Image 1 (cartoon, rainbow, N blue to C red):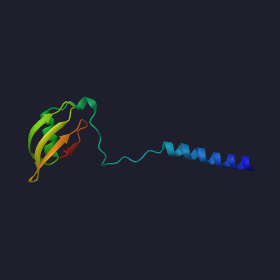
Image 2: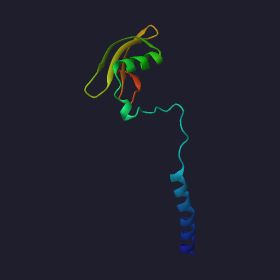
Image 3: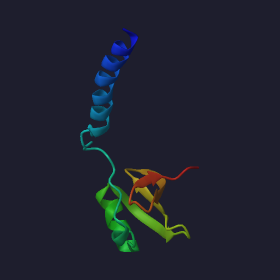
Image 4: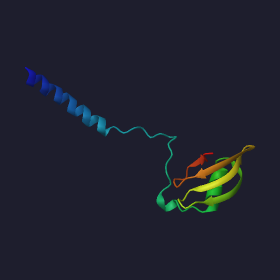
Length: 96
């Protein structure tokens, strides 16, 4: 009787594992999609434009470090901010 129960358990478990591996999560509309490598060579004006579109003003001191990360000073509203733009094109506040 034990081999029959084991066989039934395996026949129900194996398709469940296979199904779990083929399910893909729904595309998250808020997910960040990294910039492809051929577009990562953005120049300062492209970064400036991207930041202005994100609502930042008075963008200054735009500098790229040796790792390819842009460091920027600007304002969001009336608040001064220090930002970084990583190689994927994501704008983040710089750690203090």
